[in-house]
Amino acid sequence: MSDEDLSIPPEGFILQQGRGAFTTHNGPYYHRPTLDGAAQAFHARQRHCNGVGLIHGGMLAAFLDGLLAAAAGRAAQTTPVTVHLSIDYLDMGRSGDWVVGEARVTRLTRDLAFVEGRASVGARDLARATGVFKLMRRRPT
Image 1 (cartoon, rainbow, N blue to C red):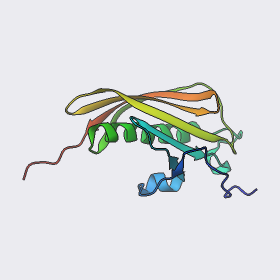
Image 2: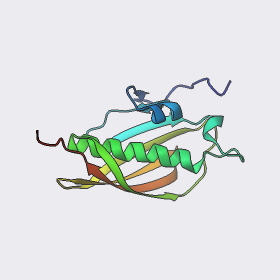
Image 3: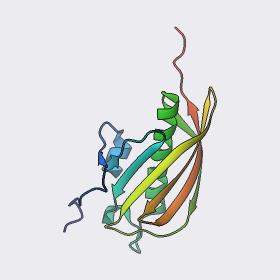
Image 4: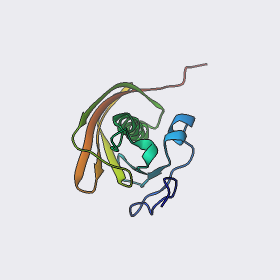
């Protein structure tokens, strides 16, 4: 199988459309509808890995940032912008792994969303993250 071949996504996940240029370049990403929060996944390829064959920490950071932002945006029904992101790397993933992330809002104010989430391969957590997101509001005209 070549690096660009895709395997079948985890059950319930569908290809996500309409992402920005940076995220589209790093993807493709998949999402699963949830009652609250967000669930996303990606199939790790060689281009997502570092020189020793492990999923690059920067790739996991970008994935978690988007995942947590999706949960914030869904809860607030507006566009979130990252103010703070904290990540604990817990285990290693490799090319060929399906990385699945889930996130939920823990606190929502008028201007900020506080979110937590995890990225996993099977039962192994690769990373956990917390984030704070500024909730963008339209300026009155």
